[in-house]
Length: 167
Picture 1 (cartoon, rainbow, N blue to C red):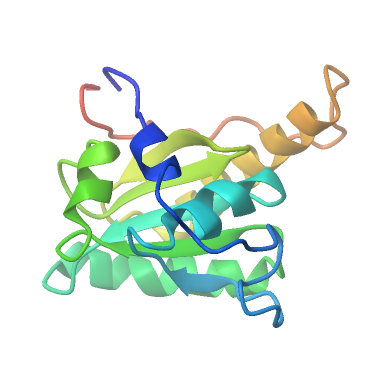
Picture 2: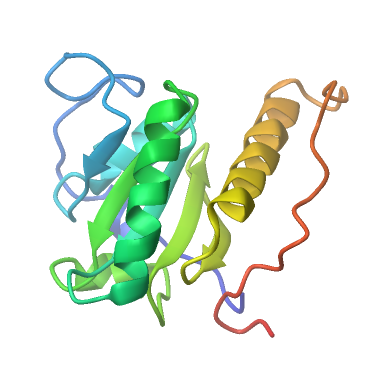
């Protein structure tokens, strides 16, 4: 990916305080959330300090999005809180899509400790999505543990993310 993703303008917005691991209303952890410019800071940046947030940039009219979204939603539920899926409608949230330099959809990022990590673009098979999620979750665990190796760290996924500026 060429260039950095600058989310600092979004951080300066007034947002309600929220617990990183629980929704703003104090209820149970919800594995799939709709995110807008208004709640991006609390639901993605702040929450990512405690749990990885996988961001799905999608649109209602997008056929590949309709193929991938159910897979991501099912995996988020199955993950039982290991990560959260944040769905961002690019038509309604164009500034967020621009901040992440989204050029085609679906585009999937992980936000880990406030840092965006490009994962992949397009509708990919469920097994490949699972591999990507397992790899980045293990990577997060390794970062939290410092430089110590993590037992059972999966191999890097064989798929190459198709992100803007990469071929």
